[in-house]
Amino acid sequence: MRPCLFPSSFTLPSVRAKHSEHSRTGWAFAAILAAVLVAHATLLRLPYFWDEAGYYIPVARDFFLTGNLIPTSTLSNAHPPLPVFYLALAWKLFGYSPLVTRTAMLLVASFAIVQVYLLAKRVANREVAIAATICSAVYPVFFAQSSLAHADLPATALTLWGLRLYLEDRRRACVVAFALAALAKETAIVTPLALFAWEFLFSFPLARFDIHLHSFSDSSGSCKPRRIAPKIAQRRDIFLLLLPVLPLALWFGYHYHRTGYVFGNPEFFKYNVAATLDPLRIVLALVRRIWQTFGHMNMWVLTLAMSAAMMLPAIRQDGATRERISIPIQLIFAIVILAHIVMHSIVGGAVLARYMMPVIPLVIIIGVSTLWRRVMEWKWVVALICFTFLAGWFVNPPYGFAPEDNLNYAAFVRLHQRAADYIQRKFPHSRVLTAWPATDELSKPYLGYVNNPVPVIQIQDFSFDQVMLAKQNNDYDVALLFSTKYEPPRRLIHWEFWERANARFFGMHADLAPELAAQMLGGTIVMQEKRNGQWIAVVEIPRIRNVKVEAAPSLLSLR
Image (cartoon, rainbow, N blue to C red; front, side, top):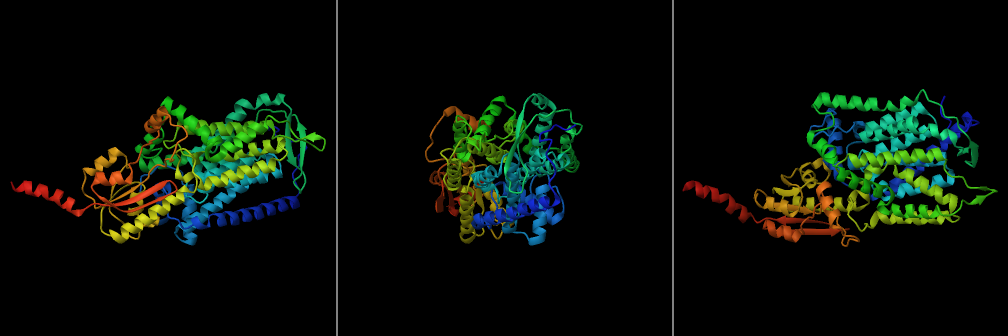
């Protein structure tokens, strides 16, 4: 017998009602897609950014050109192939270009937004669903990631779809969705595993509780709360939630067969797993993950408003108090959120906010539902939250963050576009000293920065130690310097222990100012720009210095 998470009196809607619901969902998807296309109009032709340029686009392009799932233009990280298939299909149908890529990703983002709406409507009501959907769509991290070709967005969309199907008690369909999510990104497997643990270990005590659940029994979407007391018995199909592991295991088996490595090349595995298991690092990563889930990019405004609202009594309406999201569903949301926080605190070398995208809508749904239930002017509070999210697109927080968490990534790309164009025009046959991702931007024309490949010499970053190393190598004519980490002009809190820990565990470093780096390299800045807290500079290295250095060995050889 299946656990009764839904009213026993719940009946399937008629065929006509189903058709009407699907039609409304289709129109909602079309409206959302149009809105996100308009909102991203100025971003659709941008060249590829950071991990797009370093991994996802090269891998998809290799498959597009050769049909080989194991990349040849970059080292394989063993990420599952679903995003590769999707991008290659889009390029096959419409041609290879950033415009096609970003439009294809916006389709996925629109699907994810629709799933937020349907999920919120399922567990709460239409008013909460609309508000939570708008908040999720304008949340800076989600908005910035919506057009970027990373695996996290497809994994988020498919995870939300699977969770909605799970709550609708459509077990086999949700297993398919979770399997696809895991084939989009391997870490998405944590959701079905968390749900399996929930059912196997934690469901049975809930049989003692009375549970409130909202259901929608008419086409208008009016919310009719019903009181139910489920009898939770052991499910025969509980182990279906383990099935999404199988296609992921098959992919890793195929990857091992082709490369000799299960989880990517040794350097990738060391960075993302072997080097992340230090207990202190796990604790520090846990702190960062909690902040990214409940505070980052103005999410603290929603968290604070929700916490304050919990001190207020529930609003009475039509003789009854407004209903909360049912306790079992809140617990399901909580265990999924917790599983993502813990898992991403243990694995993953880069503690990026986009990894938490699958659970951010769950936090927003719970927060908006709490405001709806307890605050009379809840719409104004939600409007304020949306305003702070919109401000987060453009206004950087007073702490270090990844440019991809808001529209700062567009400033990064445009700075690099102009520097690459300058180098092409002024130094067409020069060797360029720079760091990743500019090394890929200059050497791979298909990324959209240059027309012809530029010879590059790579250093890790522009810290003092790396610039000193570069100074010892004179085999370059130009240096392309840029800010590899965003640093706020003024920090609210400066904690020496935190700074040292970030440098030790998370690769934080201080880039030299371009003027100082140019002086150390013996060059002159010929082009420099700053935008939104980031900078880029082109440094010309006098050829006479290189000639003298190269001439010295030949003179010595004649003696």
